[in-house]
Length: 225
Image 1 (cartoon, rainbow, N blue to C red):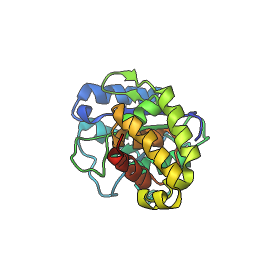
Image 2 (tube, helix red, strand yellow):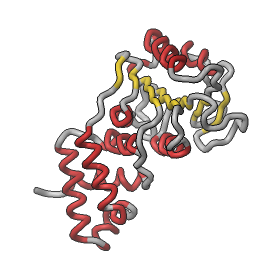
Image 3 (cartoon, helix red, strand yellow):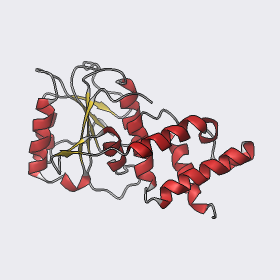
Image 4 (cartoon, rainbow, N blue to C red):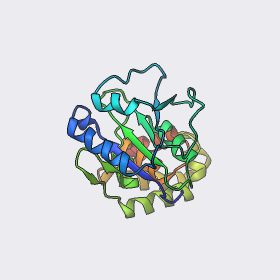
């Protein structure tokens, strides 16, 4: 895990067509970026259109672009300006946060649009973890310190188990894998869905395999008792 030294903002799915939310976000970016900063816009594909909404189109003016794998403009370097991730995936955000870990003053902004595609999860958990500015509410999201402590313990104590599939972890480390499943089931019982937990982990700086983490969290629902 790494300490939060950067600033973060989030446009949730519900605000994609909210002009006021876009204006608040634009103001936040101007207040949290150095003068003459060059934004980097990251999209799944380089040819994804950024023509609408108007707030996105204006944000894309004079911005550099890369796809989620880092292909595209070579003119932008970490620290040049905010990273704006449009239609974010968990692995993309994880990679970008690791790239700027420890670099003070770097802003990361996530822009979500309503979708039923499971490859594009809600980033409510991430927003809570980092205390992101929510453009829809004009307020910062609240973190959950006890959840951060619990997940940090899970990631530290069960690193080997989380590197394997649930079935392989149960075979290789029977007692500890069972305890891990129990801890994760406790979080599920508390009402946290897998998107929230996985993206919260991203916000905490988790560097492990997110697909494996999701598998373990999903499998915890089958444990009895």
